[in-house]
Length: 256
Length: 263
Ligand SMILES: Nc1ncnc2c1ncn2[C@@H]1O[C@H](COP(=O)(O)OP(=O)(O)O)[C@@H](O)[C@H]1O
Ligand SMILES: [Mg+2]
Image (cartoon, rainbow over all chains, first blue to last red; front, side, top):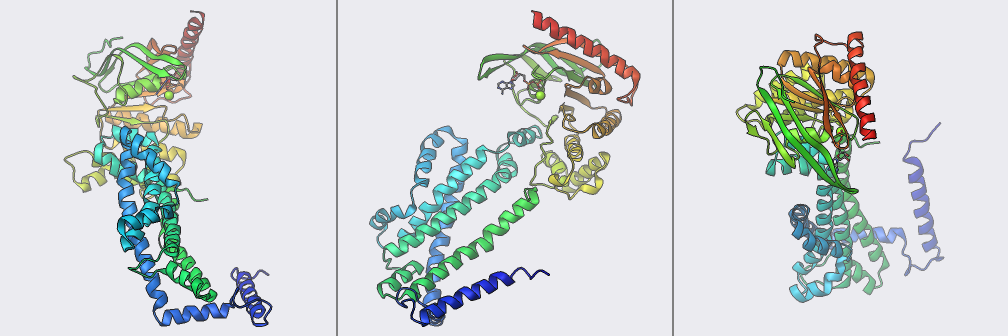
């Protein structure tokens, strides 16, 4: 007889949390270094009730969404241009390849200088995380479109805008989506680093909350915020990237 | 060679030469090719691989341009790809992001002067013609290789092109499916009287389908011989008369190849 699949993970999780809770309460582990799970949950609950956690999450998610959107909107046409125009690829394409390897948190000092300690500085860091990854992914996927599709479409009378919207983009879509996913991951990490790294006067995000937890030596706050940060990343994947990727795989027969 | 027939030529190649700058230096893929394809003719180009068959077809399609000589479609020179000459490739080239019906409608949507309903009707008609009327909503990956090639055939036929160009469309299929498609193609050809240029390295297939078979030999690609095939249609691939003719073509090809090797 086999157990339903969720049974084992649930039992293990409960066991692990139980041990952890017990280790802290019995004094075997210092509460200051490693707060009990009940404390972390308690802090999260309080944070929810007094609005602190939700408002911080909102500030962070808004920065992320805005920066990501700007990065995608800019990266898309620029990547297509790089794929299409030689001299743009030889200039912008090379720059993009270089900047893509630079963790975008490295932009923080310059961003602060250019924009001041404002929203725009953080959003800029997020844009830098997204833009180059999307640009490079769009360029690569457009250049790798199966030439046979292009030839077939051209003999059927397709060309110009029609060829781009009806053939090149749909054919490049899987690569573009994985590029967006990569851009999102870069942006998310950089945003957290930036928020922990500098105090932005215009808004108190999750990173700032985590940093505050550290200064107050409240590790249950640090852990709680870590949990929320994971949750946001997980939800973004669950709500957008996973369904899109699954749909692509299924509709094009890439599954299994 | 010029056609002695009275029909006007649909496609004309005059002293066409095509060179490539390959990795191992310049290469003459086709040299001094002159062929007239008559209106409503089924012309088959046959030859060993590397003799420039695909290149010749790309030139006819306008996907490549000749280095010397001229290609004309009726009275106008071929300067690029166009809806009047559709190509069916060796791989089906169906778009994986569209379903079967949308694939067949793709070319029709680029044809002006039709309503969407007319386009859909026409696409359905051709899908039925190739025996896939019940697969409209399937995705290409859900079909077998033979079915996919049939969809590709419907897709090339639907916009009703003046000329249909086919590059080894059956070579990736198993023998049974292939025989079936030979039947389909002949039926469609007799019903619709299209001008068809088909490329193959399978001599039996060439003799089975063609009104004329043009034999090419490689290095550089040249026209060696032209065979008129007078067998009545529908032809069966296992017909003894057809087999005898195919044997003659094969012999001729072998002699040209050995001559080429000795030169
Ligand atoms: N784009 C290309 N660049 C360089 N050489 C090519 C190219 N296309 C074809 N060739 C060469 O031209 C010759 C004819 O090729 P092809 O037309 O594909 O032959 P076939 O279809 O008869 O097998 C071959 O030697 C091939 O290597
Ligand atoms: Mg070929």
